[in-house]
Length: 311
Image 1 (spheres, rainbow, N blue to C red):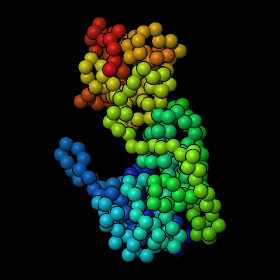
Image 2 (cartoon, helix red, strand yellow):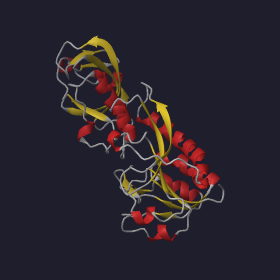
Image 3 (cartoon, helix red, strand yellow):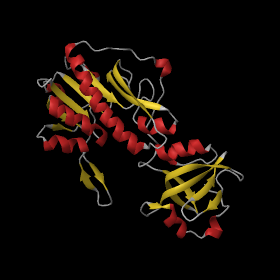
Image 4 (spheres, helix red, strand yellow):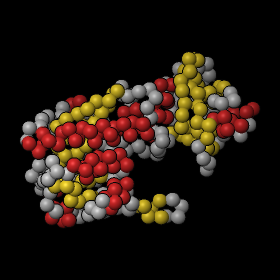
């Protein structure tokens, strides 16, 4: 495997362990990642985590703004295989047809479930009991190619996007390492996806970050953990947006309208859902840092928020 020439395409932290494994075990001849972007109030340019790793290992980097128009560097680079993970753009067929071993993708779900760019978020928000990683051949459509291998992961009640991100990233690295020899030898499986079983995990919109307390407590809990630590679920308290970061479901039945603040303790804020009271324990008020609910509650005028409706 040490002689395998690889073009790697990826962008975020999730893909870093996979690239590092490839650098250790193969010849990575080119890294393709998204262009540097402006971040922060000072609009400083920041490179992707994948670009940082590539530069640390003196690997050539290509950053097309639109890969469907700018792919000459890629097709001119001699490689046996192209491996992608969370790259962020649809790969044109002229690239897919180039390497002799094809183009494969490391996807953070058990395909055909949760095709798309936000499978980690939707696995939690949708209340999935398990997810995993799929190694697949790429085709011209989004996450529809033949499956080569999969590895399952049982989602814990304590998982959030951050923990799921880290666990599946390492799972993907190990699965790819185990799968590559079969791909090289031509002995790998190639299983067509059952499109009738497909579900989709499109990128989270700003509107979807808002909590609807008319849902069940379990649905609210899943949304909060499915959006933490990014992009974070939100609601409106005291006419101000508050990000809800951590919560838990109580055994108490809701006796007031959904969205009513029904209890204020020293370290938690109780809000009614359509069935149970959910307790908020960690928040980020607008313009402030993350804080325990204890510190947030100390700043509230309790007599004005108790029994008020959260929007």
